[in-house]
Length: 132
Ligand SMILES: [Zn+2]
Image 1 (cartoon, helix red, strand yellow):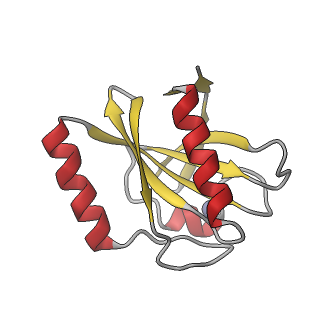
Image 2 (cartoon, helix red, strand yellow; image 1 turned 135 degrees about the vertical axis):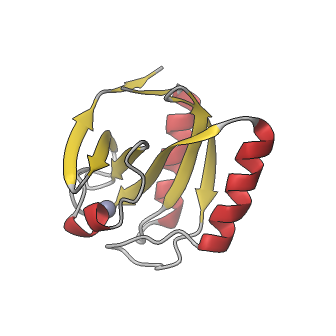
């Protein structure tokens, strides 16, 4: 289960809306599956259908997380025109079996949908998201 405080969920949705029409991406950091902090990242692909986290920026964030005593608990990105479900490309690019892959769909822009998945060995398993 992914536990997300309301203000973090709002922050993520706001980021996704700002990057529209391109996909937004970022990292969730925290402890024991509980997200405490959002790191907004640049989508190096600058694309409406894929995202790529810049390795240099990611290294910086990894260092900051280590210094703050938190771990990467999730990777989020937006789907601007499709449902909040991992694409084939997302599965191929999922290198961290432990983290939650959080997808925010802006398909219905008035009602963004947040869903979360674990992706292990190419298999997608949805997990519950608790916002609050
Ligand atoms: Zn995707």
